[in-house]
Length: 129
Image (cartoon, rainbow, N blue to C red):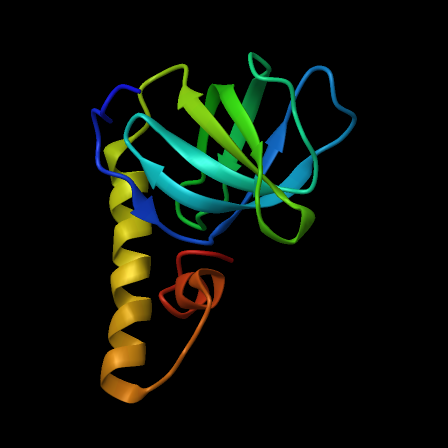
């Protein structure tokens, strides 16, 4: 297995994706994200090699990009983890926004004892509508 080119940042921010061979838009949660790709937690197995369109719905500038599923493995609670490689360079500010959300979430827990999901932290920061 090759070492990663980019750091991955753990998160559980909800995102949406579509694929030409699936019906409709699907909402899943990120497991982690980095400049080269991301890992999703989804409800079902998807064939590696499948192209997908990804939307991270930040309120100011939604991050929309394309990628390819490079692996899909069973995860916890009947869900699947899917490794996605970006087909095009993703905007660095989108990754930085994810890091900012996660740092805010961690600080709220450490400083105030407030536990929140990544989605709640994103909404608190005004990153999601």
